[in-house]
Image (cartoon, rainbow, N blue to C red; front, side, top):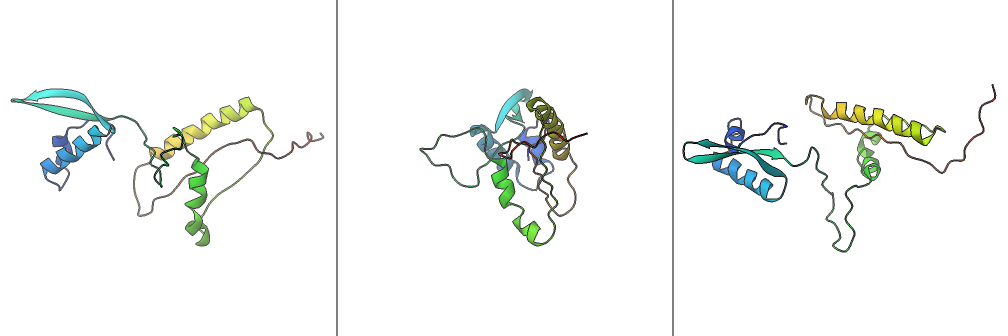
Length: 153
């Protein structure tokens, strides 16, 4: 994972056990494929040291190769992935989940989505610890359920 702040291959090499040339090669491969870009340079003796930054905060990688003729979308069905991932956790009794339905306005659903996005952002920023990687799926969508009449007071 590339750090949030800009780094040069020399500063990346410091905590690594790999040779500096190997780190530099892989940084060049990432930059050549559009995942990193040069964000700053500085002169160190006669050499220009390049500092790289990410080109996006998040990258989506498909589980299967894309079909050449298919139209490539900038998004994918998160819930298709979320439905497959937790099967083993469900079998082991380790899946925590809820599903609820409510008749609400589109405006209220949009405001609720904004709150969910803040929760996802919080989950993304949690410090890494432990031995298990947890998945977190969240969403809101219209259903085909019929609208119930309002509750009588």
